Length: 152
Image 1 (tube, rainbow, N blue to C red):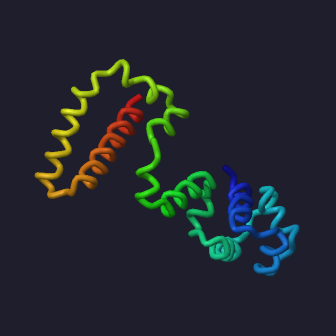
Image 2 (cartoon, helix red, strand yellow):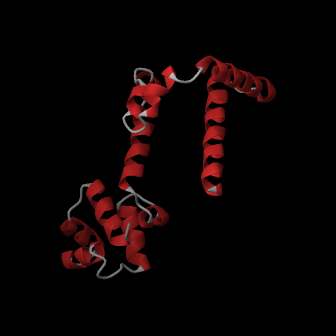
Image 3 (tube, helix red, strand yellow):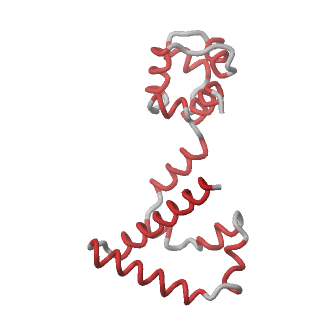
């Protein structure tokens, strides 16, 4: 994504018009438009003002990904009672169909037994609570996945 696109998405996410941003920064609306179209770039001082206006760090503004930011905001606003009601397998199987079918192919009990052993080990060895041990194990699986992807 380009900086201009990031600026456009951050402004839209903030609910501001080009005119409003221009007024707050003391520049013309055309200047904001040129930044968002990648015709020109804001200088570092204007970039800092933009990051403050959009409530983002400079790094976040440069790498602004509206989808990731929206997902993070949803996670931050969602409490456990809501997440307990969600059928995560069903939700994720729309993106990853294997999640809807593997139960008929895989001997789940074999893997569940080994995973339970690993969870208990994390609880005993590190004193983690059950949920914390589960989250650590999930994160370790994600780490293994990233390592395998990097080797390809």
